[in-house]
Image (tube, rainbow over all chains, first blue to last red; front, side, top):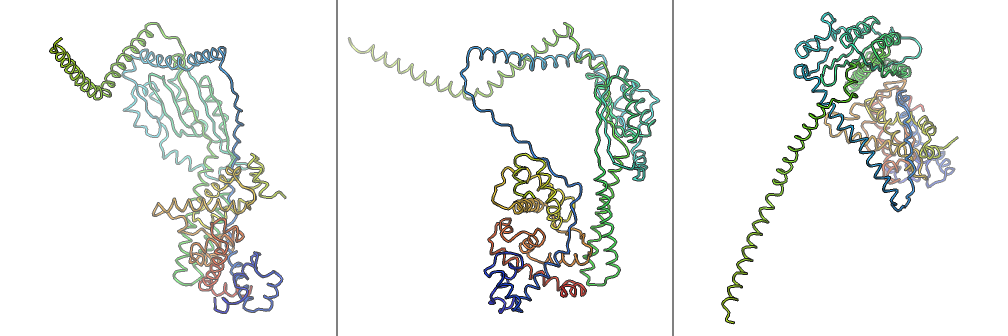
Length: 416
Length: 182
């Protein structure tokens, strides 16, 4: 800014404020008249308009579709007005009764569950000491051989090994975007919980069903913990259009205790990804052309190259995101949990008298040990203090006795 | 048309419809606010989402009398500063070291513009961007940044002049010609 501009009235900041529609010391009419007459101010105004116009070239584009409106939090419940009351005998009796009921409802099951756990261990004892273990089937096939001999022996030896990770990758690779259904794109999920009487054939049957419908096992785990009976949990992937048939077949394995299905429409997300990919590729093309055709300063060339590398990274990331989403659309996910029926009986059945006596005896011994430990801890905590106060008490007692003895001696020596 | 202030008042009373209307009105502006200041589009989206969550959740505390725009961009600005502070602790993870990609029809012009903006003092650049892109008034900028009105005016003028000089020094010949012809 020149010295003439600095001392000029109105100041250049005033001209800028006028252009921005802000309040100025000079009225708008006066300012317009001044601008028409003053070349210096007109030049300032032109410069400011030019800068603003150039700044508008940078458009950051529209917000992505994945940016969603947040939910409004629920308003807190109205506070209940304070009501004063005087506890009557009836109210106290009701509260007492409620406390007894609450004790019965909440405390008794805890004791019962504990007893049931101990009893279950006793009932399963013959095999428990040897077979209390669990292993993962699938993902690392070799791990089961060393860690789960008995559980593995319950399964047929001819059961095929789970698909290796590379095979899964191949399957997923086959689920190319080209195989996507037209229309809305929906990620489908289902959860099945089943109780079976015969657990031995469960795993091969599940694998056969998955194979029959052209899917694959994503994760499969057999838990052979003897205390809780055997169970199989896993995640299966089947083609989305065949999930209904696959679920029907799986439901026939036993008694279904949970059957839930869900879906997520990702059409907008994929359309948005496509648009962002197209935009990024167009930018990449323009930057590439710019690099080829323009010969500017080295710093400018480096700047364009840096930008190009960044745009390409964006393209890679968007591409991977799109591929992942389309795979989830192509293959639905079934989360499955299959348990042995035996478990149900153990948890709910009545315990025999001998078991209850053993449980009571175990509880008694545990309580005795607990009380001994408590006494020991009390001695450790209070011992030093008791010692100090004991010494003080003994010293005081001795001093008191000597004083009393001296007084009685003095009294004896006095002539009557 | 319902004003922003009426909408945020209804949001404070639990109206999801009003929240959606406010979101639709400002989603692009808030997104662009972060996209111009943050290199990573995903981070920009996350910060924009955080801003809307803060606005909606804090709707009951919104005080009438102030303009909603300055309230909204004040929150966005604070979210940005918090993110910058968080990233400042991580030496190699700068929020805006690598500027965002251009989306305009003429990428090279945008490149020159962005490079020129990068040469400005940080405070000057921020004030200029709040005025040019978020279209905030001087008073709103002063509220958002907590600086006096006169300081905003002088900083804005200085920033515009500095940007003009930087653009003239950097832009290729055709761009300069087009600027003069305006």
